[in-house]
Length: 140
Picture (cartoon, rainbow, N blue to C red):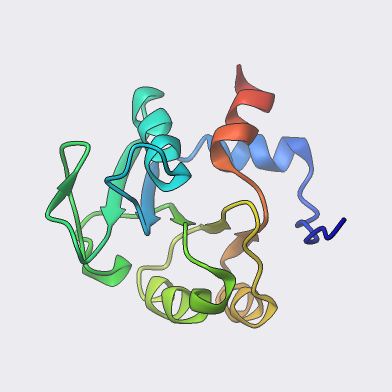
């Protein structure tokens, strides 16, 4: 079976990251069957400030959508990415302008080049993990 490697964060480090509540969600979906919809919906229901980034929508789950992370007016602590691995680099380049504390690449997403760029900017990288699953595992 093919497995994608995962970052080396400890449970304590993931708990610390999950304590940050301003989360931009790149690739957030209106389709309720997709993880890119139900994961941010779960976060909203657990007191996170979810900021959708989707240039094809005006609002998702009642939240104003932005075309890119760099256009968001408020502070962003975590950029949670629901984009294929090969599309992550431009997302990270844009997100770096916002200076988030963490870029979180959802389960199955890994782009070493983009991750190294973010690390060089002092941004923590989580990859191949689901925020929903980690929240349930560590904070429920």
